[in-house]
Amino acid sequence: MLLEPLFAHAKASPDEIAIHDDAGDHTWRQLAGRVVALSRLIGTTTHQPRVGLLLPAGAGFVTSFYATLLTGKTVVPINFLLGDREVAHVIADSGIDAVITIGQLGARLAADGQLKIIDLAALAAATSSAPATAAPAEPAPAGTGKPDAPALPAPRADDVAVLMYTSGTAGLPKGVILTHQNLHADVTAAIAHARLEGQHRFLGIVPLFHSTGLLATMLAPIQLGALAVYIARFSPVATLNVIRSYKLSVLVAVPSMYGALVRLKDAGPQDFAHVYACISGGEPLSPTIAKAWLDRFHVPIYEGYGLTETIGPIAFNYPAAYRAGSVGTLIPTAQIRFIDDTGKSADAQAGGEIELKGPMIMRGYHNRAEETAAALTTDGYFKTGDLGRLDADGYLYITGRKKDLVIVAGEKVTPREVEDVLMRHPAIADAAVVGRPDPSRGEAVAAFVIFKEGQTAKPEELKTFCRDQGLTSFKIPRDIIIETELPRSPTGKVLKRVLAEKARAHQG
Image (tube, rainbow, N blue to C red; front, side, top):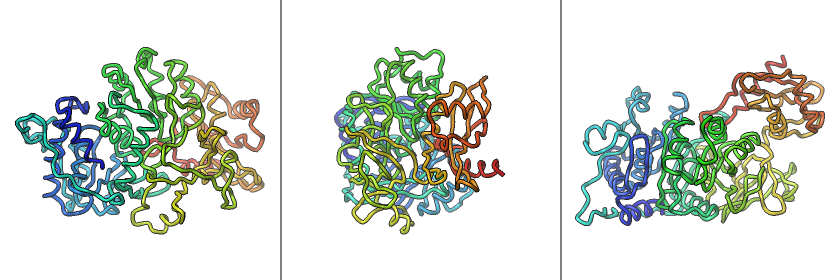
């Protein structure tokens, strides 16, 4: 289901480059051989059903992912940007006793004497033919030069392939149970939806411990037999260089990365003339970044929508079907409905809380039966907690998070609407809106803003700007708090709960 494409490409095109990363090129033959070699080592290292991966994006992660599946075990990607407390929680909650890692990333695990560490750097050093970030060297090829596929496990559709932990924006990370069917169904539908083909070349700068990175820049190119170019640590200059050098055609990034790229002084439309699609996910795409990108490079950013619980994109724009401001249309096999404040079905164009159904929806949350029951309906829909609506042509618009709604004297304010207005101001580089308690109206709108370098504006000027832009009076921020940066999770999402606490303190 997931392993077959890798070995099929290794047999059909053994000497073609499958991956380029910070260590160099890796052919399909090398990748498949290392998967087999590492799977044997995993099998002798742990008898537990799950294996942790604490690795940057690159051939090492890809090798370790497929080697773990080849043993019939479940992959537990660990976000190496998390703090020690969160990493320890993921290890304990998942029940893993072995982690595949590399160098300094593994050093932080050394204090845990119970963990079995497979260090890819140490393995590579012990084998002269393996690059520094790869797995052990592959077995010598047979006479034809085309490696034979090993005996592959035959997992059931509902067997667990990945236990992926959320970024912990609302507390400690929680494990999302994703089956072989979840991953296969979503990547297959996403490829068909976007009309992706094997000749496309993928940019991998979103970490592979993130659902967007895993599906869009690993599972998709492996299934297609396409080249993936990984950068372990995002750098705007390095990213532009590989886009130029490899003529990459599918770029997948979070909005802040696009924002950094569009600010590069020597970048121009010629650098993106060969690009098929620039796809954005992970957090809402600012209209300011979208416009700046289009104006400068003459290609749009195609915004998408997905969650860890859907293992990546469940709706997104693509070249043949694009509507600015939306997150596109649903991928094949996905279903959607909207629920109003009373818990009843709402008209799709009126909108409400988004509920999703399909073969890509998670099985549940690991060790959290109550949260699983609360998130999944009896008829199989997943309650996303996001608010949105469909237009008459089926394009989905995300209007906010249900829990982030600000209720001002009974009137609802979606933070995203206010943020979008603030971002139109020429002095503002970033903005985030939350609610804070108000004794007379229940809640009031509070905005946190970051100014562009060398620019500024007084809070009263910004309030006047919001009014001039047509915001209703109760939506205009009561408090505008100037910051130098916004608190973010390791995956880049703004931590609204931290800002809500700051807003209450500012009020006091």
